[in-house]
Length: 407
Image 1 (tube, one colour):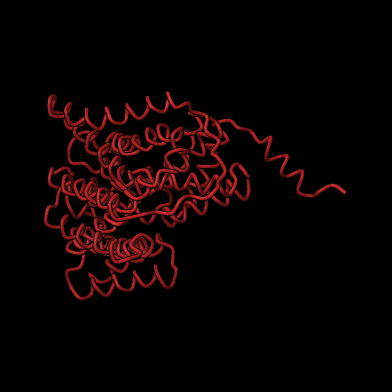
Image 2 (cartoon, one colour):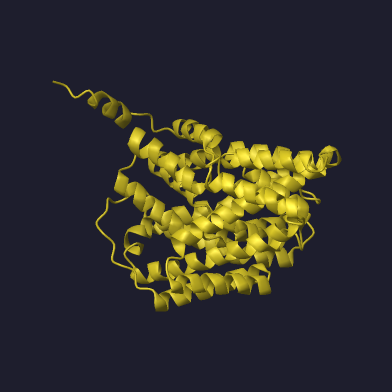
C-alpha cells in the first residue's frame, strides 16, 4: 500500500526553488507574523520545518543558534539564511524584502502622518503609544532576563551593565559594556560541549564568506571616517543605522537604547515622536528593526519621508546580510568553540542590562508622568504577559485609552 504522505513529501521536494516563490512565502509571513522575534521563529519552524520540510529539526535549531550568536535581528537573519539555502543570493534578498516590506511601509506611512498631520492627532493617542512601549519593553526585559540571566553571575553582569549605561548614556558606553561583558564571559563561564547535529545546507565557500566579513568590517570602520571627512546628513544617518545594526545583541528591543542615544541628541527627531513610533512598531507584523523606517520617515531634515525611511531601513539591515553571508561557511567550526560560546554568555547577560536601562530612560521617564499612566501601563503589561493578548491589540488599546483619559 502506498504511503498517503509520500505524495506530499514528493511535492515538497520538487517545489519551485525560485526567488519568486521564496518572496511570496515570506510576504505572507510578513503580513501575518505578529508577536515579536520569538513568535517569528515559531512561524518559521511551522512553515519551513513542519510544513515544507526545507530544513530538518536539527538544522533549523542550528540556524537559530547561529543567528542568536550574531548581532542583529535574529528572526530576520534566520529568514535571510533560509532564503539563501533555498535560492541563493536572490533568495536571501527575496526573503528579506517579503518579510520586511509590509511593516516598513506601514511605519513610513505612520511617520509621514505624524510629521504632516501631527496637529490633528490627539496628544492622548501619542502618549498612550508611549505607555504601551513601557509594557512591551518590560515584557521583553522579563522574558530575556528569565532566559539569559540564569544564575548569580549573569544577574550581576546585567545589573552592572544597566547602571553603567545609565551613567554613561551614549553608544560608546553601550559598546564598551558589551565588550567588557564578552571578556568577563571568557573568564567566568564554562559552557558544555555541543551535541551531534545536522549540518546546514551551506552553498557559500569560505573564501567568499571571508570577503563578506571584510566588507562588513570595512563599512563599520570606514563609514564613521567618511562621515567625519565629508559631513553630510545622509552619510551620517547611514553610518548611525549601520552601526546600530552591527552592535545590537539580543533582538530588536535592544536597538532602542542604541538609536535613542544617536538620533535624539543629534536633533533628528524628538523624544516624543521616537517613543510614539516605537509603540506603533509593536502594532505591525514583521521584524521590530523596521522601526528604523519610521525614524527615517519622520526625520526633520532631508532625506525624510519615503526616501529617508528606505535609506535607514537598508542601512540597519545591511549588517545582517553581510554577517549571515560571512559567518555561515565558518559556523560548523565556530559552533564547537567553547570560548566563543562563553563570551556570548557574558554578552547576552549584558544586553538584558542595556534593555533594563532603556526601560527606565527614556521609556519610563517619558511616559509615566501621572498615576493614571502607571495604571494604564500595568494593565497593558498584564494583558501581554497573563491575558496573552497580541501586542498589536494592546498597543491600539493603549492609544485609544490615552485619548479617552484626556477627555
